[in-house]
Structure formats: C-alpha cells, structure tokens
Length: 259
Image 1 (tube, rainbow, N blue to C red):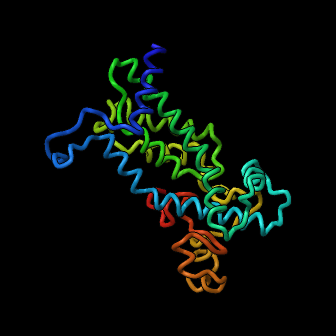
Image 2 (cartoon, rainbow, N blue to C red):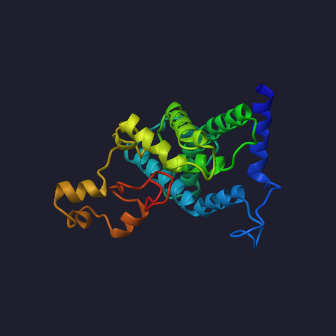
Image 3 (cartoon, rainbow, N blue to C red):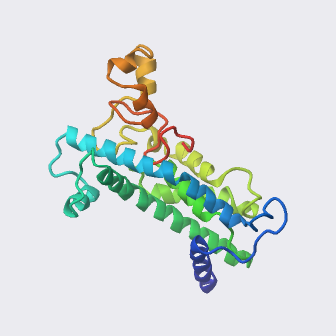
C-alpha cells in the first residue's frame, strides 16, 4: 500500500511536466489529440497573467502598509528575506512587489498541492486504479482564492474536504457534481468565517484595515464618496488605492472571478 502511494506521487509529479500517452482521438479533441490533463493545464496557463497581477497587487499593498506604519524592522520572515537578498520592500518596484506576493502564495500552493497529491495517491492505491487528472488546477485555483495570511492547516483542511468530498468519492474527473476548488473555498468560508472576511484578511500587516469600496459606498454616502477620498475608478479596477475592492483576492485577478 505504502509503495503504491509513493509510486502514485511520482506519477502525479511526472504528469505536471509530461503528458500522458493515452490521448483522445475522437471528437471534440480530434484535431490535436488532446487529453484531460492537458486541458486542465490550459486553465492554469490561462490564469498566469491574472496571477502575476495579483502577486504584484498583494506585494504593492503590503509594502505600502509597511511604509505607512514605518515598521522598522519590517515584520515577518518574508520581509526579512527580501531585505537580506537586496530585493527590498519598495512599493513602487514591480519586482519587489511580485517577489513579496510570491512569498505568500507559494507556501499555500505547495500545501494545497501536497495535500491533494496525498489523497489522490491514497484513493488510487485503495481502488487499485491509476491516479486521476486535475490535481494541479484544483490546487492552483484553491491557492488563488485564499487570503494571504491563511493558516496552512486551514489550507490543508479545505483542500482535503474539497478534493475528497467534492471529487474523489464520486469517482474522479468528469463525475463530480461541483467544482472541487470552489467546494473547498465554500467549506472554508462556512467553517472559518474570519478567514475570508476578517480584519486585515487581504493585506497581511497587523493593524492595517482599510475600508473596501462597497463599505465606502454603502456606509459613507454613495458613489460620490469614492472620488472624495482620491479613489479613482482605475483604482477600483486594479485593486489599488486608499481602499481595496471587496471582491479582489490577494493574488487572483483584480476583478475577482475566482473569488
């Protein structure tokens, strides 16, 4: 059993880079002999531009908060690593912002990926079938929708629930009733309500909690309040400025289709 699980881990790893030899040669994929794993990988590739913008947005807002509070030294191992490597915490340096955002995203993504790989390998070993497709895109989209300061045990909890009860118990790809990534996020929203909507959930600097655009509009007097606080509609679309869009995930796309 253990050897089978370990072997399945290896198969999953190889599939992230190499395509399966088993391909579809009938409609609708007959033109390029596509397969399910490659199709899921296309989803990940298509989201990379939004992911990069999200990394910059998170790093930009975090660096701005650190500068606003004049925190010296800047808190956390991420800031210490950026300073030690010479990248710095300049909110107007795109490289520094992207690097800071990536240091929040990567641990969450890796935890989601490893937890998902464990369950995929275990179910495949118990059922004595090959490991299923789609793990990379599920872990990727779960990580995109998580707030930057999400505890890693909650990431593991949500990923476990989403992939087991949202996918594997139904038999795998093509058989589940709801999207496993969305199912994982829905579970976390109801189980840990403060995770998504708590104070400072999206800008991981203690004590930094700016009002969202929706809060300004609903609580402070309507749309005219937005330009009154020097917040342009360009800021609304890019998730930057004195207040942050309520539906913009930290590293997901600014308009929030994955949130």
